Image (spheres, rainbow, N blue to C red):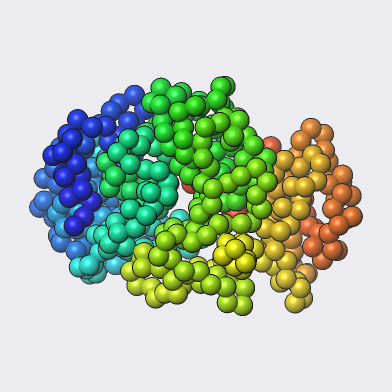
Length: 443
């Protein structure tokens, strides 16, 4: 079984059902099957079973079509991030022993084989690139079962079925978007999306399509709420993860989507979904809820270990993905930050997450990001990039946090900005934050 087979089965059962609305164009299940079949003919001469192949395509139409075309041929598709430089692509291919890269366009396509010998993945049906901002992205491989067998539980929790019309935004090369697409395909539902270039079209598309679900990271949800001119009453579920949701963000979501159940999930690319929580007005921000059915989480010396059958190939469980926290008496996961986001100053451990939350309590601070930066004399120091309201100054912020932050916890550098830098996944761009703190930043 693979995802091409899913598409084929649904196309036979309901060929005219909407699978994808991309801006102003609609693609039925049959349309996408025809595209995948056509693209598979282009690739038939060189695509080999079990060979991992990068796909470079703009927009979800050809990303989906090429992904499913390679699945039909028994190859292992991997969607490429669109913003990678040529030298990075070469590094990815060589470092991961891939078969080559397939550039797919509407009128033509081009396959470039790798120079070295490539690996084979006889058990895996797909791969996904890690989305880290440093180092060479690695490939996370999966069998069909490692996602497909979880879709029943996942879709039941998120309210996804054949009637679902879910809006998502951004490239399908990112694991969360790809997972949600395939889960909706599994259920026989519909995907709604649009180009990121068309600012302002997103709320219009949600309204005109009568979207039932929204899947976005909290930072993008905040932007949507700012753009919304009136409440969206058709949206019944909002699914968000990768970041915590503050009470202020929850209130903004509730105003813009008054009928929506807001579900915050916790997961990772290596393990998929781990836990979830239906948010309420006064919820503890660090509470990530209870594990999904069939998944167990334990805290060992402050590190979170997850035992799940729904993990990528080539790792062993229980697995720790670098997150810290503990399990409370109700069996809920209380998140205390990523291990990489703790700063050790002479044996005194400081949580960047905790500092961000403390800074955002200060009057006039709209948002804050805390990251360590290198100091030639002192080693690691603490820096904060802050979005301030009105005429609030860095000096006023310093005066405020002196009252309740230990001297060792106080940021040595503060940079004020109009908005926090986000990458194309809607997450904080920590590399840009470090540049801002090192004094080389220009607005």
